Image (cartoon, rainbow, N blue to C red; front, side, top):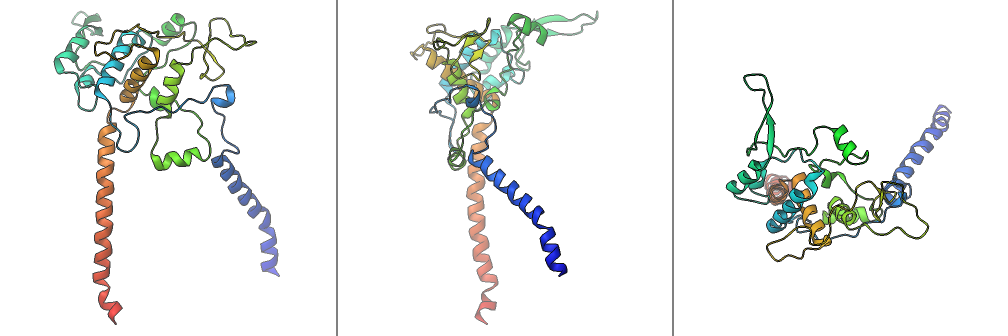
Length: 292
């Protein structure tokens, strides 16, 4: 009798646990998916082909150098990159400029330093050890220059942005190791400046973008065709500019991507060999017991 009463009393708890489990399954399956850019009016970005995608992906050096050119000549007038040091431009795994080239870039900027012996701050040419200077002295100045909007820092933006994949897409991404939703979104956003559909009114000071959540973005179209001059014959189109600067942003966000993937592959090979050695060791150790 006591067992029966205990079983009955636990039914609500069991039902609650089962309900919670089913809710979790629905969330994973997309039935109760969290709010996404698409639900707020943003078009789902198209998946692009990136050289750094997949378990064996690598950065395209020429593309990173072109992307840096776009960032330097266009994007850096509004956006900062606090985690990017000038010396990173010459380090392995990145654009791989020469050290002299990186020095020339650094010396082209005035960096505030000090205080000196008189207690005053002063400006000096940049050094390799300096980080990329912000175009504004503070957030308030940045907002005042951009209609109240604060241009986000470029340091981790490519890893911070994403879009809802849904079911079963996120499961496929686990097996294919596709992690480039951020670059897809940034590339789409830079190409998403179009005229608003008929009947759609864009708030004053905003611009219509097909991929931005809500479609109204404060940032005007940042780049146009033939705005940046490439010397390697690469097409000077908005699509190419956005593709190159997005790849550069991905490198800034994950500068050691190639080393991570290389070490991960080596670890997997080691684990496979180690598992094989453990299997044959186990067979040898227990062989005498099996014979008896």
